[in-house]
Image 1: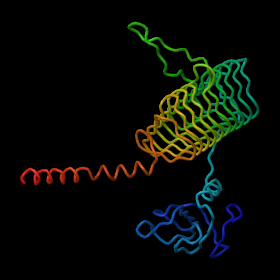
Image 2: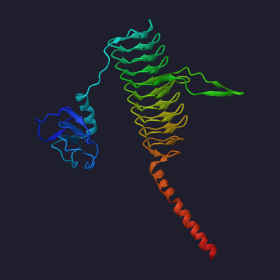
Image 3: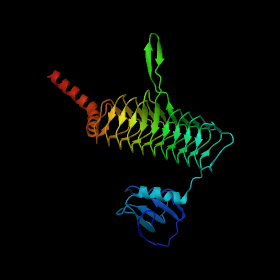
Image 4: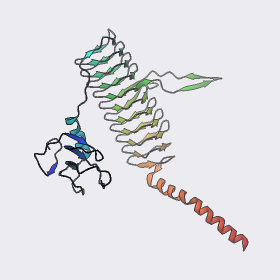
Amino acid sequence: MSYIGGHLIGDPEFEVFGIGTIDNITSGDLVFLFHQQKIAGFISSIPDVIVCREGMDIQAKNLIFVENPRLAFIQLLPKFYTQDYPEPGIHPTAFIHSQARVGERVSIGAGTHVESDAIIADDTIIFPQVYIGKGSQIGKSCLIFPQTVIRENCILGDRVILQSGVIIGGDGFGYERSGDVYLKVPHVGKVVLEDDVEVGANSTIDRATLGETRIGAGTKIDNLVMIAHNVKIGKNCIIVAQCGIAGSSSLGDDVIMAGQCGVVDHGKIGNRVRLAARTGVVNSIPDDQMVSGFPAQDHKIEMKEKVLLRKLPDLWQRIKNLEKKVFKS
């Protein structure tokens, strides 16, 4: 109880052995309910312990009421299930350049390649088959999962997590037509990931043409996200899978982008903006807006337009019928 600060109704001596789901409950399980819902038809049996918000109409042998069940879930889960990470040390098949610097208690896995002048700070774990380019810096207590690429001169803050297949600092997509060919625009800038950033599997963040591409502290990026050169993303943003943010765009703090959103180059999104799934941003969006659709507009207006669009076939038929009556008369 001290971990989550909840209020118990039931047996304080009851022993919990694990955390279960409402459709697969075993004896001794603790089950979390995040939303008000009718669980009849989903629940396989009466749970021994349910954690939920106070006031929910729930039956269980023991109830724990908390202010935020999802936060309580995050706090309790590591008490029951721990993830094993490699012990500190450098695998004999890893290549560490003589001019690279590796801190204390660092783990570097098999086949990892660390170029010259790279810096890896204390307590960082680098899994097998990771590439770290020349002059890149990785902060303390980072997790770099297998087959990740961190190109030259990129900077990662503390507690950054890069899931498998992430590419940090690849060239931006820039070309200029010259006669019959496209000439590649050189990209000589860098990428900066501030503290506590997480990037999901197979996402890419391109280096700047000049200057930097920057991701603000605490921002979380899902799998399969593409962030182009010179983009600036603020602090504590959420960017869901398959979003694409074009070059030189900027996002303020606390922005949430649902899946498959797109932002045009040089687009500007203010603080605390919410973008519904598959929103296309072609103009600047001021602070504190909820937008959707293509092109992006106020979410309420977009919903009203969708309702009207669904009525168009019926309206069209009514117009045709009226025309027939008019012409007959």
